[in-house]
Length: 413
Ligand SMILES: [Zn+2]
View 1 (cartoon, rainbow, N blue to C red):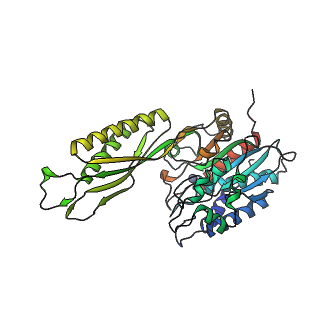
View 2 (view 1 turned 30 degrees about the vertical axis):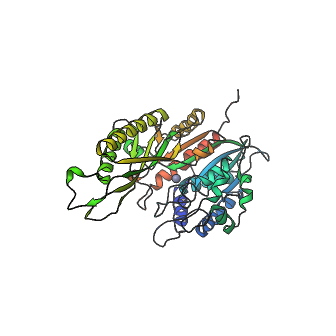
View 3 (view 1 turned 60 degrees about the vertical axis):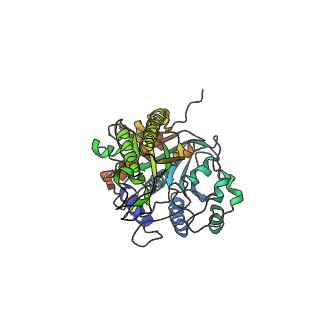
């Protein structure tokens, strides 16, 4: 393993992938697009070079399979996603796929066959940018893709079913992407941290404990629009001022506990004119925490406070829950093996929760999951400023390879 020098190769491949984009000068690669097809073909060529048999499943996930010491063994699945947000960084998702391919390539080079198969998956949709719902690739993989999702529409009015057909896939076969629990031994994903913890601790990699649960709301505030010059301050029902108070409640409540986060990332005030008291405001709310009860408590407190604000200001506030995902814990038996692989590289073990969602949230429906985080510069992600060090890419690959080589199936009781 000491001879493995894959950091530079991984970074070169990331550059090649990042060049495949729908928008010149910035990286945007959405689900079931021409760009996704090109990225899939590029990664497929690397998988073939690494001794894997490849296929694209019914939702467009790319799967490379490296057989174990006999055919048809259940697989350890490693991977991440190949889609991006708009104006994305080049490591989010791609690092996990490219590193997993590099690890298998090393097994292939050394002529090693393990007592299980290794499958590398490049999920087709994690970010959910095109159709507004996330994890479409990994949900189909886990068999939890609801058929109704085929009717979701993108900005141009195309449905998921239309897009699948355009991509050369058959929406009627979507269920064939589903894997069963006995084909899969575990799912392990390497991903950039997208946060500042590892950098602060001066560590290149860490072991994830849990993917945070999240609740999202659409909130609509209705007051009275009025003339900015003639309606006295005392008689106003200003929807924007009420919203501002709500947003500060979110900030205060979520700052009061470690690991709890709350964000209002979208706001729109109507009619949106300099000389009109805002009568109607819509904003989003996103609350996350590693612990579901902690998140629930925060959400209840925020809702109570918002109601009180509505009453006092005599505005109506309509709250719609748009998303609810429980926290997904990583499995202790996989965490122990990841820790071991990290320590085998002479690195101090570090446990951290994931504030962002990942494919593992969906894959957890059929198998146990584990995650390895790689340090990223300034904790910045979902931005072209996303960056990692070549040395950290190398360490990540060594840890993942060591994990794969030493992987022991969970003892069934
Ligand atoms: Zn990601």
